Image 1: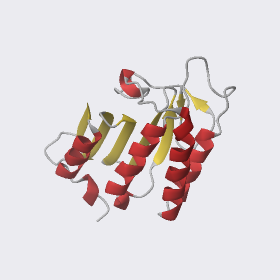
Image 2 (image 1 turned 90 degrees about the vertical axis):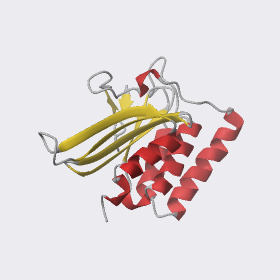
Image 3 (image 1 turned 120 degrees about the horizontal axis):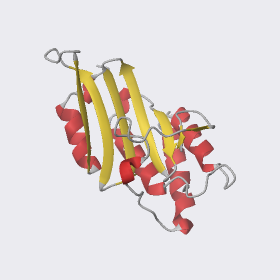
Image 4 (image 1 turned 180 degrees about the horizontal axis):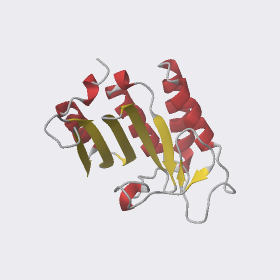
Length: 171
């Protein structure tokens, strides 16, 4: 299952249809329960301080999901995934607030749709692996769009996005 962007109802995962939709077999990094709440509190407070209220509110809603809301085998939102999202968001603040989703494995996903030919989707299972899709304008492509997808360390993903001008989409 996937908890869709800014929704509380469950939406079936699209795993396999486009290479996304369930973490692609990646397991989220887990940390001890005792420190998770502090991380989530810090993340939510940091987002609010930076005027990113929609993202803070969405994460707070995802954290309130009860065991009854989850299906068998589904995990709760990963603190590491959420932390990585915030660090990533600070690198690309000019893109604005993304739509946030939550995959059953506890993986947070962020999606920016700037225009039909400017689209970024990133899943954050941990620091060592993010999955992404970038759709960007390309005059040499038949449909005028270049589609990049991959899985790598999140710092490398930031480099790839910079190489392809993602940070300049709104400037």
